[in-house]
Length: 198
Image (cartoon, rainbow, N blue to C red; front, side):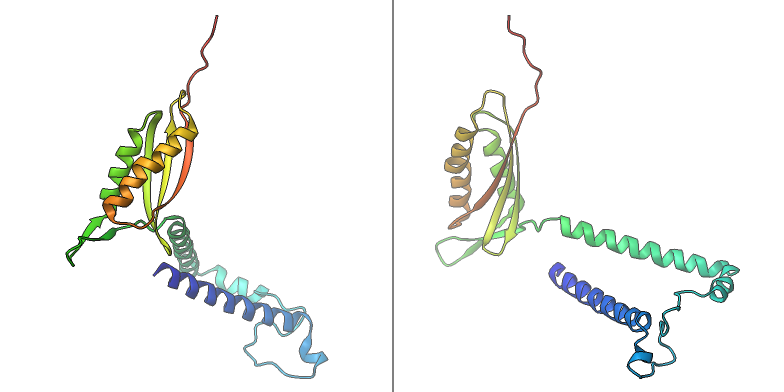
């Protein structure tokens, strides 16, 4: 759905910008005179000296309060739509459920949130891990885990990563019947005060 909205919006924006740019260029370069052709009467820019709003047009709308309310209302709606679109881009597509083959021809549905919680609990219980956060997203090649591990001061990052892969991720793949579960891991360190030695 979001991919379709993106394509439609980009297509319409591109068409609008190309049309507006062509209209401005035709008038700014005075092409009707140089190439000896005429423009329709409704053409917005037909002369290099044309402006978007003439003095008469600006004075005509100045005294109409309702007009400016409509203009600001439309602009506010456009800003809200642009913000919605931006937030929709930033929000990752979370994995809602996984189809698990039961082995007897039946298929069970595993909620993505349940697998996230199990992975978070197991990753958070690893030695040296102070806090874990897991988000499962749907990718074209299959599910992907985005994992953030906050490591304790004494933790060895290589050991924590190895145990995450061989324990938590291995258990998640096995229990969900996944041939593979890609993971992007982000490591952070717990902030703590420096200790004085002496």
